[in-house]
Length: 281
Ligand code: C2E
Ligand code: MG
Ligand code: MG
Ligand code: MG
Image (tube, rainbow, N blue to C red; front, top):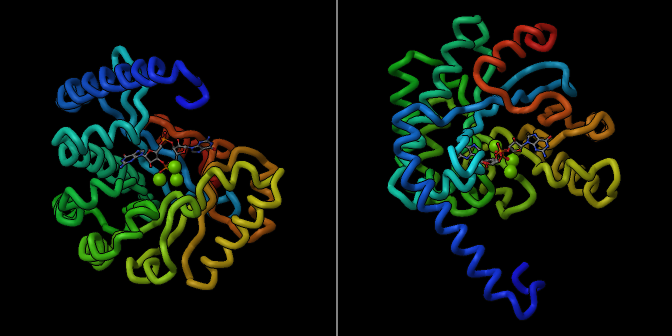
Protein backbone atom coordinates (compact mmCIF):
# COMPACT_ATOMS: atom_id res chain seq x y z
CA UNK A 1 0.00 0.00 0.00
CA UNK A 2 2.81 2.40 0.89
CA UNK A 3 4.47 1.62 -2.43
CA UNK A 4 1.34 2.47 -4.39
CA UNK A 5 1.40 5.93 -2.82
CA UNK A 6 4.62 6.67 -4.74
CA UNK A 7 6.67 9.59 -3.48
CA UNK A 8 4.23 10.36 -0.67
CA UNK A 9 4.78 7.00 0.86
CA UNK A 10 6.74 8.31 3.84
CA UNK A 11 3.95 10.58 4.93
CA UNK A 12 1.40 7.88 4.50
CA UNK A 13 3.56 5.40 6.29
CA UNK A 14 4.30 7.80 9.16
CA UNK A 15 0.63 8.64 9.53
CA UNK A 16 -0.30 4.99 9.53
CA UNK A 17 2.41 4.20 12.00
CA UNK A 18 1.45 7.06 14.30
CA UNK A 19 -2.20 5.99 14.21
CA UNK A 20 -1.18 2.46 14.83
CA UNK A 21 1.09 3.28 17.74
CA UNK A 22 -1.44 5.62 19.33
CA UNK A 23 -4.08 2.98 19.03
CA UNK A 24 -1.80 0.30 20.39
CA UNK A 25 -0.92 2.52 23.37
CA UNK A 26 -4.61 3.10 24.06
CA UNK A 27 -5.37 -0.57 23.81
CA UNK A 28 -2.50 -1.49 26.12
CA UNK A 29 -3.55 1.14 28.62
CA UNK A 30 -7.24 0.28 28.58
CA UNK A 31 -7.11 -3.50 28.26
CA UNK A 32 -6.32 -4.27 31.88
CA UNK A 33 -9.14 -1.99 33.04
CA UNK A 34 -11.51 -3.44 30.50
CA UNK A 35 -10.87 -6.89 31.89
CA UNK A 36 -11.31 -5.71 35.47
CA UNK A 37 -14.60 -4.06 34.49
CA UNK A 38 -15.82 -7.06 32.54
CA UNK A 39 -15.97 -4.94 29.39
CA UNK A 40 -14.65 -7.67 27.11
CA UNK A 41 -17.15 -10.18 25.80
CA UNK A 42 -16.90 -13.65 24.41
CA UNK A 43 -19.31 -14.35 21.58
CA UNK A 44 -20.16 -17.74 20.11
CA UNK A 45 -20.65 -18.98 16.56
CA UNK A 46 -22.36 -22.30 15.79
CA UNK A 47 -20.50 -25.05 13.92
CA UNK A 48 -22.80 -27.60 12.31
CA UNK A 49 -22.35 -31.15 11.06
CA UNK A 50 -24.42 -33.28 8.67
CA UNK A 51 -24.23 -30.62 5.99
CA UNK A 52 -25.63 -27.98 8.32
CA UNK A 53 -28.36 -30.00 9.99
CA UNK A 54 -26.89 -30.63 13.42
CA UNK A 55 -25.22 -28.32 15.94
CA UNK A 56 -21.98 -29.77 17.29
CA UNK A 57 -19.81 -26.88 18.50
CA UNK A 58 -19.78 -23.22 19.40
CA UNK A 59 -16.63 -21.29 18.55
CA UNK A 60 -15.72 -18.71 21.19
CA UNK A 61 -14.65 -15.38 19.68
CA UNK A 62 -13.48 -12.49 21.86
CA UNK A 63 -15.09 -9.07 21.38
CA UNK A 64 -14.06 -5.65 22.65
CA UNK A 65 -15.90 -2.47 21.83
CA UNK A 66 -13.30 0.16 22.75
CA UNK A 67 -14.91 3.44 23.87
CA UNK A 68 -13.01 5.46 21.24
CA UNK A 69 -11.65 2.99 18.69
CA UNK A 70 -14.77 0.86 18.37
CA UNK A 71 -14.60 -2.87 17.80
CA UNK A 72 -11.01 -4.07 18.11
CA UNK A 73 -10.03 -6.95 15.88
CA UNK A 74 -9.52 -10.03 18.06
CA UNK A 75 -6.17 -10.79 16.45
CA UNK A 76 -4.91 -7.25 17.26
CA UNK A 77 -6.25 -7.60 20.78
CA UNK A 78 -4.50 -10.91 21.39
CA UNK A 79 -1.27 -9.63 19.81
CA UNK A 80 -1.18 -6.43 21.86
CA UNK A 81 -1.92 -8.40 25.02
CA UNK A 82 0.99 -10.71 24.33
CA UNK A 83 3.36 -7.72 24.00
CA UNK A 84 2.03 -6.06 27.14
CA UNK A 85 2.32 -8.78 29.72
CA UNK A 86 -1.44 -9.29 29.51
CA UNK A 87 -1.47 -12.53 27.57
CA UNK A 88 -2.24 -14.69 30.57
CA UNK A 89 -4.92 -12.44 32.12
CA UNK A 90 -6.64 -12.27 28.72
CA UNK A 91 -6.41 -16.01 28.25
CA UNK A 92 -7.87 -16.60 31.73
CA UNK A 93 -10.66 -14.12 31.05
CA UNK A 94 -11.69 -15.88 27.85
CA UNK A 95 -11.34 -19.32 29.43
CA UNK A 96 -13.62 -18.21 32.27
CA UNK A 97 -16.34 -17.12 29.81
CA UNK A 98 -15.86 -20.31 27.82
CA UNK A 99 -16.40 -22.35 31.00
CA UNK A 100 -19.45 -20.28 31.91
CA UNK A 101 -20.97 -21.26 28.56
CA UNK A 102 -20.07 -24.89 29.20
CA UNK A 103 -21.85 -24.68 32.56
CA UNK A 104 -24.92 -23.18 30.88
CA UNK A 105 -24.95 -26.00 28.32
CA UNK A 106 -24.55 -28.58 31.06
CA UNK A 107 -27.52 -27.09 32.91
CA UNK A 108 -29.48 -27.50 29.65
CA UNK A 109 -28.39 -31.13 29.40
CA UNK A 110 -26.34 -30.38 26.28
CA UNK A 111 -22.96 -31.77 27.32
CA UNK A 112 -22.55 -33.37 23.89
CA UNK A 113 -21.91 -29.87 22.50
CA UNK A 114 -18.38 -28.50 22.49
CA UNK A 115 -16.89 -25.06 22.82
CA UNK A 116 -14.00 -24.31 20.46
CA UNK A 117 -11.48 -21.86 21.90
CA UNK A 118 -8.81 -20.15 19.79
CA UNK A 119 -5.24 -20.11 21.05
CA UNK A 120 -2.64 -18.03 19.21
CA UNK A 121 0.93 -19.24 18.63
CA UNK A 122 2.22 -16.66 21.12
CA UNK A 123 -0.31 -17.62 23.75
CA UNK A 124 0.60 -21.25 23.47
CA UNK A 125 4.32 -20.57 23.80
CA UNK A 126 4.03 -17.88 26.53
CA UNK A 127 1.37 -19.39 28.76
CA UNK A 128 0.94 -22.73 30.54
CA UNK A 129 -2.31 -23.17 28.63
CA UNK A 130 -2.45 -26.88 29.39
CA UNK A 131 -2.27 -26.42 33.17
CA UNK A 132 -4.66 -23.48 33.18
CA UNK A 133 -7.25 -25.35 31.12
CA UNK A 134 -7.01 -28.68 32.91
CA UNK A 135 -7.08 -27.07 36.37
CA UNK A 136 -10.06 -24.89 35.50
CA UNK A 137 -12.09 -27.75 34.03
CA UNK A 138 -11.34 -29.93 37.03
CA UNK A 139 -12.29 -27.18 39.47
CA UNK A 140 -15.68 -26.74 37.79
CA UNK A 141 -16.06 -30.49 37.23
CA UNK A 142 -16.58 -29.90 33.50
CA UNK A 143 -15.86 -32.74 31.06
CA UNK A 144 -12.74 -31.99 28.94
CA UNK A 145 -14.61 -33.50 25.99
CA UNK A 146 -16.69 -30.31 25.94
CA UNK A 147 -13.63 -28.31 24.94
CA UNK A 148 -11.77 -28.08 21.66
CA UNK A 149 -8.81 -25.79 21.15
CA UNK A 150 -8.06 -24.21 17.80
CA UNK A 151 -4.40 -23.70 17.02
CA UNK A 152 -3.14 -22.30 13.74
CA UNK A 153 -0.95 -23.95 11.17
CA UNK A 154 1.91 -21.74 12.34
CA UNK A 155 1.67 -23.29 15.78
CA UNK A 156 1.67 -26.74 14.22
CA UNK A 157 4.82 -25.84 12.29
CA UNK A 158 7.03 -25.67 15.36
CA UNK A 159 6.15 -29.01 16.83
CA UNK A 160 8.75 -29.27 19.55
CA UNK A 161 7.69 -25.99 21.17
CA UNK A 162 4.10 -27.06 21.62
CA UNK A 163 4.08 -30.84 21.64
CA UNK A 164 4.16 -31.28 25.43
CA UNK A 165 1.28 -28.89 26.05
CA UNK A 166 -0.87 -30.32 23.28
CA UNK A 167 -0.14 -33.88 24.37
CA UNK A 168 -1.18 -33.02 27.94
CA UNK A 169 -4.43 -31.51 26.68
CA UNK A 170 -5.14 -34.41 24.33
CA UNK A 171 -4.46 -36.90 27.13
CA UNK A 172 -6.89 -35.02 29.35
CA UNK A 173 -9.54 -35.42 26.64
CA UNK A 174 -9.52 -31.94 25.11
CA UNK A 175 -9.88 -31.97 21.32
CA UNK A 176 -7.46 -30.21 19.01
CA UNK A 177 -8.28 -28.43 15.75
CA UNK A 178 -5.96 -26.72 13.29
CA UNK A 179 -7.50 -23.41 12.20
CA UNK A 180 -7.06 -21.46 8.97
CA UNK A 181 -5.83 -24.59 7.26
CA UNK A 182 -4.37 -24.04 3.81
CA UNK A 183 -2.86 -20.59 4.36
CA UNK A 184 0.12 -21.63 6.49
CA UNK A 185 2.50 -24.52 6.66
CA UNK A 186 2.03 -27.73 8.52
CA UNK A 187 3.11 -31.18 7.55
CA UNK A 188 1.10 -34.34 7.54
CA UNK A 189 3.36 -35.78 10.21
CA UNK A 190 2.75 -32.75 12.43
CA UNK A 191 -0.99 -33.36 12.21
CA UNK A 192 -0.37 -36.87 13.54
CA UNK A 193 2.15 -35.91 16.20
CA UNK A 194 -0.01 -33.11 17.53
CA UNK A 195 -3.07 -35.33 18.00
CA UNK A 196 -5.13 -33.22 15.62
CA UNK A 197 -8.81 -34.23 15.54
CA UNK A 198 -9.97 -31.66 13.06
CA UNK A 199 -8.76 -29.22 10.42
CA UNK A 200 -10.65 -26.07 9.51
CA UNK A 201 -10.35 -24.97 5.89
CA UNK A 202 -9.63 -21.25 5.82
CA UNK A 203 -12.62 -19.15 4.83
CA UNK A 204 -10.64 -17.53 2.01
CA UNK A 205 -10.90 -20.79 0.01
CA UNK A 206 -14.48 -21.47 0.99
CA UNK A 207 -15.86 -18.06 0.07
CA UNK A 208 -14.87 -18.41 -3.58
CA UNK A 209 -15.86 -22.02 -3.94
CA UNK A 210 -18.91 -21.40 -6.15
CA UNK A 211 -17.01 -19.23 -8.63
CA UNK A 212 -13.47 -20.54 -8.65
CA UNK A 213 -12.26 -23.93 -9.80
CA UNK A 214 -8.93 -23.25 -8.05
CA UNK A 215 -10.62 -22.75 -4.70
CA UNK A 216 -12.75 -25.82 -5.28
CA UNK A 217 -9.64 -27.86 -6.02
CA UNK A 218 -7.89 -26.64 -2.87
CA UNK A 219 -10.92 -27.48 -0.77
CA UNK A 220 -11.25 -30.88 -2.44
CA UNK A 221 -7.63 -31.75 -1.74
CA UNK A 222 -7.92 -30.74 1.93
CA UNK A 223 -11.02 -32.93 2.23
CA UNK A 224 -9.10 -35.82 0.66
CA UNK A 225 -6.17 -35.21 3.00
CA UNK A 226 -8.47 -35.24 6.01
CA UNK A 227 -10.13 -38.46 4.91
CA UNK A 228 -6.83 -40.22 4.36
CA UNK A 229 -5.51 -39.15 7.77
CA UNK A 230 -8.78 -39.84 9.58
CA UNK A 231 -9.09 -36.19 10.57
CA UNK A 232 -12.40 -34.31 10.48
CA UNK A 233 -12.61 -31.42 8.04
CA UNK A 234 -14.60 -28.25 8.70
CA UNK A 235 -15.31 -25.51 6.18
CA UNK A 236 -15.46 -22.02 7.68
CA UNK A 237 -16.75 -18.87 6.00
CA UNK A 238 -19.79 -20.56 4.45
CA UNK A 239 -21.82 -17.55 3.38
CA UNK A 240 -24.21 -18.83 0.73
CA UNK A 241 -26.50 -21.71 -0.08
CA UNK A 242 -24.41 -22.35 -3.20
CA UNK A 243 -21.25 -22.82 -1.09
CA UNK A 244 -23.09 -25.13 1.27
CA UNK A 245 -24.34 -27.25 -1.61
CA UNK A 246 -20.91 -27.57 -3.22
CA UNK A 247 -19.34 -28.51 0.11
CA UNK A 248 -21.96 -31.22 0.56
CA UNK A 249 -21.19 -32.53 -2.92
CA UNK A 250 -17.47 -32.55 -2.14
CA UNK A 251 -18.16 -34.51 1.05
CA UNK A 252 -17.38 -31.78 3.58
CA UNK A 253 -20.34 -31.95 5.93
CA UNK A 254 -19.10 -29.88 8.87
CA UNK A 255 -19.59 -26.17 8.30
CA UNK A 256 -19.51 -22.76 9.93
CA UNK A 257 -20.38 -19.36 8.55
CA UNK A 258 -22.77 -16.48 8.25
CA UNK A 259 -25.10 -18.59 6.08
CA UNK A 260 -25.95 -20.58 9.21
CA UNK A 261 -25.31 -18.11 12.02
CA UNK A 262 -23.07 -15.18 12.93
CA UNK A 263 -21.20 -14.98 16.23
CA UNK A 264 -23.61 -14.01 19.03
CA UNK A 265 -23.34 -12.90 22.67
CA UNK A 266 -23.94 -15.52 25.36
CA UNK A 267 -27.65 -14.83 25.82
CA UNK A 268 -28.48 -14.71 22.11
CA UNK A 269 -26.55 -17.92 21.61
CA UNK A 270 -28.78 -19.68 24.11
CA UNK A 271 -31.86 -18.19 22.43
CA UNK A 272 -30.57 -19.40 19.06
CA UNK A 273 -30.11 -22.89 20.48
CA UNK A 274 -33.60 -22.88 21.99
CA UNK A 275 -35.12 -21.78 18.69
CA UNK A 276 -33.11 -24.33 16.73
CA UNK A 277 -34.10 -27.40 18.66
CA UNK A 278 -34.21 -29.50 15.50
CA UNK A 279 -30.50 -28.81 15.05
CA UNK A 280 -29.63 -29.71 18.60
CA UNK A 281 -29.83 -33.45 18.87
P1 C2E B 1 -10.82 -17.69 13.22
O1 C2E B 1 -10.60 -18.50 14.44
O2 C2E B 1 -10.51 -18.31 11.91
O3 C2E B 1 -12.34 -17.27 13.32
C1 C2E B 1 -13.20 -17.13 12.22
C2 C2E B 1 -13.45 -15.68 11.91
O4 C2E B 1 -14.28 -15.60 10.76
C3 C2E B 1 -14.20 -14.90 13.00
O5 C2E B 1 -13.77 -13.57 12.91
C4 C2E B 1 -15.64 -15.00 12.53
O6 C2E B 1 -16.46 -13.97 13.04
C5 C2E B 1 -15.46 -14.89 11.05
N1 C2E B 1 -16.53 -15.51 10.29
C6 C2E B 1 -17.28 -16.59 10.61
N2 C2E B 1 -18.12 -16.92 9.63
C7 C2E B 1 -17.89 -16.05 8.62
C8 C2E B 1 -18.47 -15.88 7.31
O7 C2E B 1 -19.34 -16.61 6.86
N3 C2E B 1 -17.97 -14.86 6.57
C9 C2E B 1 -17.00 -14.02 7.03
N4 C2E B 1 -16.57 -13.05 6.21
N5 C2E B 1 -16.43 -14.17 8.25
C10 C2E B 1 -16.88 -15.16 9.03
P2 C2E B 1 -13.30 -12.79 14.22
O8 C2E B 1 -14.24 -13.07 15.33
O9 C2E B 1 -13.08 -11.38 13.81
O10 C2E B 1 -11.92 -13.46 14.58
C11 C2E B 1 -10.82 -13.34 13.77
C12 C2E B 1 -9.68 -14.18 14.28
O11 C2E B 1 -9.27 -13.69 15.56
C13 C2E B 1 -10.08 -15.62 14.53
O12 C2E B 1 -10.04 -16.31 13.33
C14 C2E B 1 -9.02 -16.04 15.53
O13 C2E B 1 -7.82 -16.38 14.87
C15 C2E B 1 -8.80 -14.78 16.32
N6 C2E B 1 -9.55 -14.83 17.59
C16 C2E B 1 -10.85 -14.55 17.82
N7 C2E B 1 -11.17 -14.74 19.11
C17 C2E B 1 -10.05 -15.16 19.73
C18 C2E B 1 -9.71 -15.54 21.07
O14 C2E B 1 -10.55 -15.56 21.98
N8 C2E B 1 -8.41 -15.91 21.31
C19 C2E B 1 -7.47 -15.95 20.31
N9 C2E B 1 -6.26 -16.33 20.60
N10 C2E B 1 -7.76 -15.59 19.04
C20 C2E B 1 -9.02 -15.22 18.75
MG1 MG C 1 -10.94 -20.29 15.03
MG1 MG D 1 -10.17 -19.80 10.85
MG1 MG E 1 -9.05 -16.67 10.30
